[in-house]
Image (cartoon, rainbow, N blue to C red):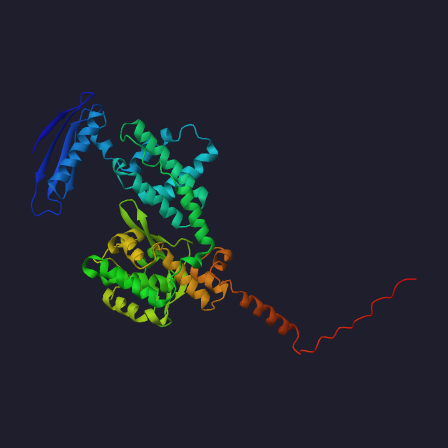
Length: 407
């Protein structure tokens, strides 16, 4: 279906939609135009599932062209747009501000949103991204700088006419950050109470998922039993599991990146060892058998063999609805890690060992999981007394008579 649209600046954009049966995306939407600078004819195309989607894509290109925006710019990803326009976006900033802004752009904004076209980034997408940074325990200043550079780049996109409203101007994240800080001060409050509750949650998530995929429940159980992040569970390879000692060496995690999910080093940038308790060993053995002979095969995948992220798990299992129905409306995927660390602490694992299992940089973080039991503190004092006095003897006090009145 051909179509031609005249636009300002002497640019003429033509478009067509072609139906190509037996293709994964059978409707190809295409636009052509002459570049007013190079005088060369250019084209841009995209495959879509339905005719309506293809027509929507074309209309978006034509609308941008009417504002004087070339089609290749209208479909530019955030990463490409930022590279091209960063100097304009950050003009006027002091040098001491540039470094943290650019670090936030490289390390957080690009991995999370860089692969999206600028025109496709919504307020909701930014809001979920900021929430993810907070959940990953980034500092308040880190979140602030990362969001600030995104705001500036998107503001430049507004000035260029690429978008009409800056979607990065999200509100309320400081309040959410304060809530997250309060929760981290008492992470025990976020833990599931017992093993039975965990199994019940895992089964409910499987029941709500499409096709009742058992792998979702296995991911949840494994994450809680090992006090691991969902990204770390996704990153497990067969070779990471030692079935002789039943130790998992945590080496990588799955995170968002341009073009989709990718694997990178753990948050602490170093490997750590985690014990695999008896309750999950049959599950692990079955996963290893299903993975086949390849030692680099993933232990946990989605129903189509893809990587898993916390967002994928949430959407596939209708997480929010399930946890609310079970009476755990505030439970997040990251709270499975809080659950495991709380259970380890209650089992009497010493703080310095728990710190190694968790991969915490600071012992103060680990100590938040220790049970504030006053009887244990009292018992510690009694133990020290017994240590200092191997042979207990009655303690006698010599009472001096009170002095008489002075004459």
